[in-house]
Image 1: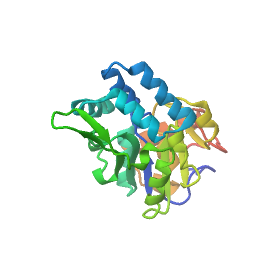
Image 2: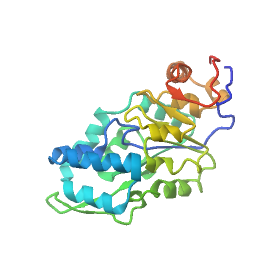
Image 3: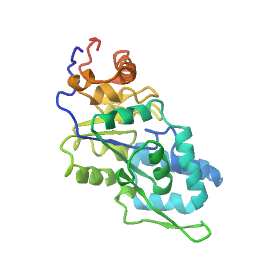
Image 4: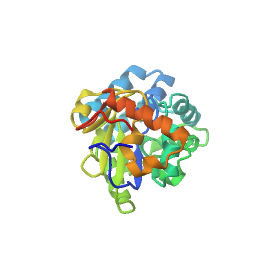
Length: 260
């Protein structure tokens, strides 16, 4: 394979994925709001947090209290994540794991739903970071874990700093301001706009996926030597991602026209 100027030369150790708007095309909190007839109000607050202000505990509390989700609704949300998964995400995760990349799911979403989706994606439960929600015996909402850093704007930065104690080289893939805070911490940050395109996020990313597929993650994460080890099926998805890069659907510095 012909190497490119943007291709990583040294293998990475871990890959962090956001969930809402990255691995799945929905915003989970907005789906819960629809279940409880406060969709328009909550959607506006979510977009404000994702593209303008970032998260904060007050906003997080405001949304959850207004929605008051039921335990059974988080189970339904886990299934909604699966039904709305971003194309090629599962095969990308399986490929990364086969090449010994630790895969993490780090989200300000609700852990009960995220664990269900993570189980489907074969991401170990211990590698999933989300916010716990508390219910009473009847499944009615009581509260959430106010100590979770993920309810704050810099929460993912804190989690990634912890992961850097384990992995020297980390990639982070996400769609919002709460992901972008890790940009200068990780080996490579990849913005994802295939579900929700945000111009201000793209402007701050060296790498930004504009197409609704996670296939470009493979050429952006794997080295040339790792490409040579891919099996026939994995190469199909690698080339799908490479085609997206070369056709301009991925913002990529110093992109050339070489073919793998």
